[in-house]
Amino acid sequence: MEQLSIPTAPLLDGGFIPLVGTGSLFAKGNELADGLAACINDGYRLIDTAAQYANEVAVGEGIRRSAVPREEIFVTTKVAGVDQGRGLARRGFEESLRKLGTDYADLLLIHWPNPSRGLAVETWQEMLDLQSEGLVRHVGVSNFLAHQLEELYGATGVWPVVDQIQLSPALARTELRGFLTERGIVAEGWRPLGQAEHAMEQNIVRTIAERHGVDVSQIVLRWAVQQGAVVIPASKTRERWLRNADLFGFELSDQEMTDLATVDLGEAKAWDANIHEEW
Ligand SMILES: NC(=O)c1ccc[n+]([C@@H]2O[C@H](COP(=O)([O-])OP(=O)(O)OC[C@H]3O[C@@H](n4cnc5c(N)ncnc54)[C@H](OP(=O)(O)O)[C@@H]3O)[C@@H](O)[C@H]2O)c1
Image (cartoon, rainbow, N blue to C red; front, top):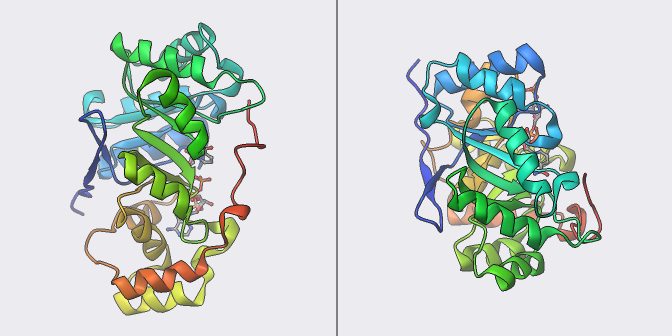
């Protein structure tokens, strides 16, 4: 089959990020390395990992096992809660690089804001230093709410280029995404198939999928990329990872987007980053 061709979205800092990437929680060890290498050989370029996932060694191995040079791949990793703060964030990131077997990351995110510790601003300042030293190309955050993003900007005058958030038609995050869009921050959807919220099982999603002759998963993912959001679905099955990136040969109409808005369960069903913390 022909290689997938995945478009990019522009970043605030002048860079670009692929609109579809793969997560890395679908397998471990050799199985993960081989799966990622195969995804990359099929055309995936964006790979999402995190210090917290304890899989960066296998991710690095997967990149090396692929036929694609490192510089063509966009590697995202994240600062774990335990590594927040000046110094610690740097040491944690250096450890991520060592495990990945690379000398730079394309995108570094703060994994969760963890407000009870109050270290997000310090962490962000350290990440800006890492960026100016060329160790990371782009810097962003994950799971940040509007007021938490404002805190980073207020302290440094720099907005994150990406906010990786829980996002699917069933958790549409409309207000937060409005805030991101106004500032040019790219929303990146984690768990973008919305399984826990049964996004793919909704009748309206099935109806729209039948109309376009595509799978329900493609409707759910197309909903995000059509609005400029990046998605990082993960599958251990080739048929599925090919389908998950095959989103650019059809378009949802305005009416279909309006109909999909009816499956949103609302912000209250998303994990609340004012309370939920991860280490
Ligand atoms: N920043 C954060 O806080 C955060 C939190 C969670 C996740 N993430 C990132 O986001 C990535 C994606 O999230 P996720 O792995 O939780 O969820 P996901 O990618 O939305 O879903 C993965 C599950 O969906 C199945 N699947 C994949 N493609 C499918 C398709 N086309 N049709 C039906 N089922 C399909 C997979 O099963 P099979 O393997 O059997 O196909 C697997 O069970 C993670 O790998 C991770 O990198 C970030």
